[in-house]
Each structure stands twice: as C-alpha cells, then as structure tokens.
Image 1: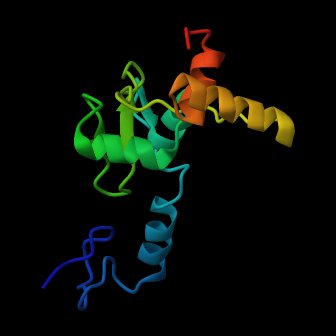
Image 2: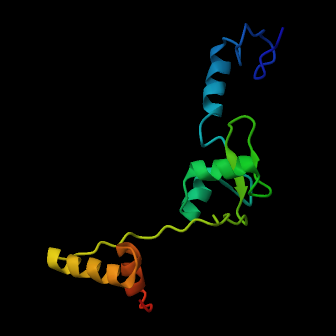
Image 3: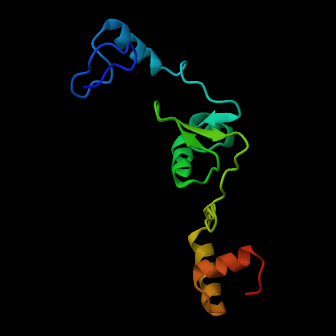
Length: 137
C-alpha cells in the first residue's frame, strides 16, 4: 500500500498519484503549472534555449537525449529539459543547403545553350554551372 506524497495520510488506490482529498488534488494540479517549475540559475528551459539560438525545441530535446549539451538534465517531475546557458549549439557537418537558381531563357536561347554544351562535351547542367562560375569551358 502506498501513501499520498502530499498529505502523507491517505492510501492510494491502483495507479493514483495522489489521494482523493480535494486539497491533494488541487495541490497536484498546481504543481504542473509553469509558474511552479523554475529553471535553476544558469540554466534555460529547452524552449528558451531554442528561441535564443533559433532552432526548434524538439531539436534541443533530441540533442539533450543524445548528450550533446554537457550539463543538461531532465526534471524528473515535469519532464522538462534544462540546458546550461553557456552550452554551444552543435554544428551539423557535411550538410550544405544551396538555393536553387532558376534560369529564365527563351526557347531560342535555351537551344543555343544546349548546343554550346554539346560542343563543349558537357551535360547542360554542368555547362551552366561552369559558365556561372566563370570556369574555362
């Protein structure tokens, strides 16, 4: 038999967290509000850390689970992650996102481009990239 953690008097039934008394129920309800959970000094909540560095809270949580933020810990009661303010955001390596460039050309201009590419022995896309980078064709 388990005893209520708030009042310490009443017995809990089944999977209850607190007893049926209105005082304990209200205290349990209040304990889950944001105002009650305060981040320790020198730490930020995952959502605050995400806003600060412009990443998503899900990414911060995932990195916390992976151990990429030294000193980060999860509050056992609320499940919130707290990250040190001095933690560095890990940089994703090997991934570069390039903006696609749209080429505006008439049919005649496009034919000239493809013919020049064939003469040079390149695919059209390779030819255009080399031209754009001012490399010898």
